[in-house]
Length: 164
Image (cartoon, rainbow, N blue to C red; front, side, top):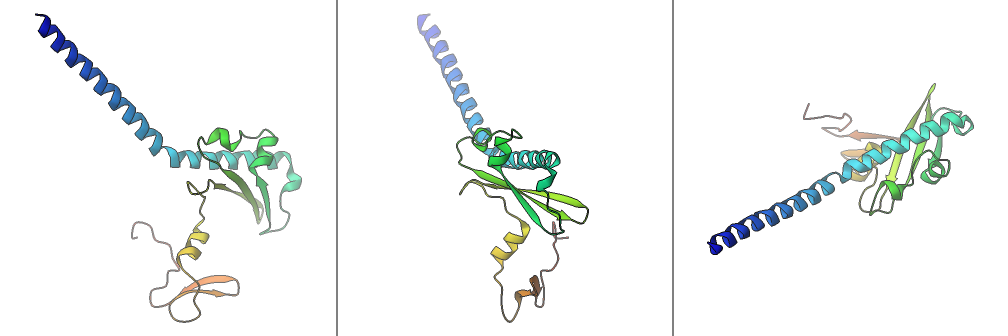
């Protein structure tokens, strides 16, 4: 009888330990998959903080079209518009800025987050230039009058999504 109780106890103990290990693996998996979205949340937080900061400090807004003002994360933190990046992003050393640009009668607020090799905000413009060097002849990306244009049999002057 004692041997049966010991076997049952060992089976239950094994199941219990197995469940704890499974839960720990699940927690580690979920913590690592949520990282990229946390960077996006921080970018959104920076953008919202810059909008509030600029609404209360309108003198920093650019006056002319296509002009920019840059607000760094240090200013947003020191003026209590957001928590510091090290409190928002654990285990990463990051810095950030928000670029405010005037377009006609409105402003756009573009957040940039730099966390070294872990994450960097990428703009479409920068990605296109990175992946397509400027050429002087033949097919490819040309720089003409400070504008970039693709030339060739199949120019990449249009953006497609899902092959549409």
